[in-house]
Image 1 (cartoon, one colour):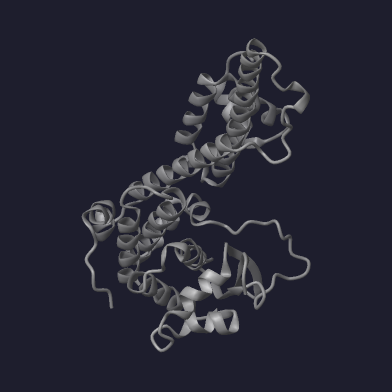
Image 2: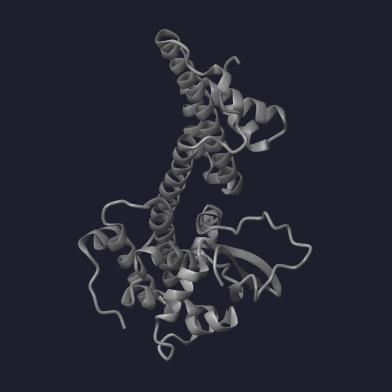
Length: 150
Length: 173
């Protein structure tokens, strides 16, 4: 027996469920959760470097204030490139996995998202093209929508 | 039992992964705090390590979570168990810790359990059309539950949202 009433937050969020759920609402929910889930993985990848990734050797330690500043900048740049690369791959890999599982007729909207993202971030486009070259059929489908030069 | 533990499920006589609990000692402490007469399957899970009658186990765990709220450090592990039970394969007939329900020796151990979200993305309009309204509501609520547990670790109103979702799931079964 459940005693307490749902809070306002809960009522608002699941209001649609208590009446009637149609397929469009369900798909919208799936898209929303999939997107949040993949973004969460990206954030996690950005927070921590992948295990086994090389760190800067101790010999590159700071020796003068000017050197220290340059060195800090260099380390920050290295970290940024590495983190974005890991995160981008995680995002694309997850989305490709999701796409592979989605019925072909509803893939279009996800593909549009990925093509748009690849347009904004060339490294993402390059990664997709690499996957397509390696024979990934979903990546090929996306690359076909991308068009343009490499 | 202490430390992390795998949870497995029996599906068509095969044993498959269903989830992972980070700290079984904390989970067991919560399950042991529940009245055994009211929650017999939860008690059986602690005692025997595995349970059949998963719909009943699901109902018990939902009511237990809502009425005997786990303390802060037990919460994650109670939610991991709920996620495994609610996210089970629809054909699953039994569930338990790997000690009682081990994977077959030739199983690939790195295979991750299929999640609620992974199953949801495969649902096409034709399959949806064949489901009764109660099943549709349940599938939507399962997604809501998955979303709350896995993507809203500390957000405002997380507990309220989770509780409302569990209440709706309990009401829909």
